[in-house]
Image (cartoon, rainbow, N blue to C red; front, side, top):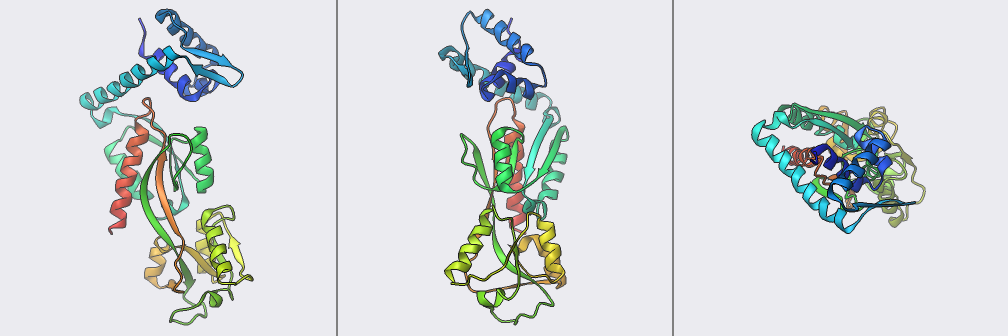
Length: 297
């Protein structure tokens, strides 16, 4: 009789495209994976996978079986939720998070997940959006909260929030209280996101369009460091005002306007739908809800 574990193994091989990668995902050995697939093919008396130098590929019968396996695994999740409730749905989710989200509503998301799905274990990685997108497509993280969307393959991208960049200055910076110009800002270092990020190049383009070529852009991969440098009076930060809401409220920092339309950071919860990993879509859905609640505050 074909057991569920064997079907899961077949599904992971089909998703990863290789026995070695499937073994890594399943925390087992490649021979063990090969043995399960061989047993499945023997029981069904059909060839399910073809191997070549590039990996493993489903045969026509393999693609047919995959549809049934996906339905079986979805039904298993439905059964667990119906019988055991949310407490019965457990597992580990590798969550990749942009630092902007860390400084805004990530704590609310973690509280909500802990309350509603206490059996979920989260492993959190904080990184830049480009690195998170790569990690998601390579399978080293399951869900990414990042500047999206991720356009690789059949990735699902749920919209989260839009944060425009603002000019954030320390209270003691010698700038007039009324509207300032971009040229006024070039007297100070502009502290912003890392060089390979979208907002960095958008800011550079903004200054170039204004024919201001002597601007000093201080690229920084750490948002915490950008905030600290701004508080210390080193320069003007080009970051979302949401990440420094507390400092704005205390008067340590303030927002200045130049009249120019600023780049907008659009965040998504990106993931790949997997029948064997229902937690991916659950975490992404709740992230979307928390982001919406935070935006209305």
